[in-house]
Length: 115
Length: 113
Image (cartoon, rainbow over all chains, first blue to last red; front, side, top):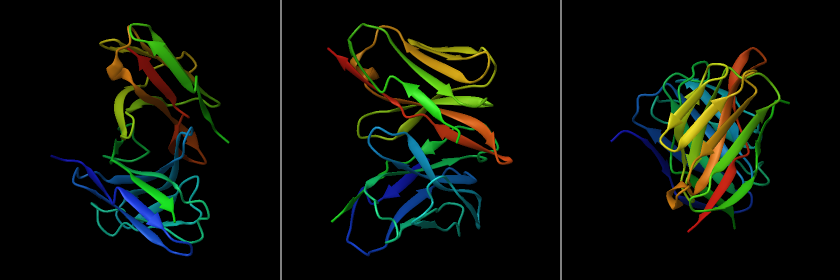
């Protein structure tokens, strides 16, 4: 079955530590996205990538970094500069990207907490 | 900045009652998508509306896109316990020479049996 796999499901971060969230898709989609979801709020875009080796900042990119070395993979690093990282992180993909009107497919998410 | 507001934030209904959530944008949208997120789950795409005044139905769900393409609604007739979840709209808007999707704040629906 095609889909998006996020790992781990739960992650704990210590003060001053960088952590990396994994996102892999086998849908052959060009575009991938990272969102942050906080209680009572909608999804806020952190970073997106339209194509391999290219990515753009979203609305709340500060304290985060990404890479897109392979079409299938779009890992997100939460750096120590992100002072309030506790949230639910969702990875998504779409066939073409924000220039098209294709729907986004989401992974099951990673819940990140501070120790 | 551009915003997409959704109301209400929460809604509790008795099973069998109807439910409506509204999505309002500060800017004209090229299209709007609706997603459903079950408790503990991830958003799942429901439908997309593109044309001004468009109405689409999926069984008990009716979706509308406003004439000005700035608002949308989702109406569920005769709710069931399986309808529980958070419903999000996502409007596609042009900003700074590019398009982006702006997600609404979501409406959390609880259905009481």
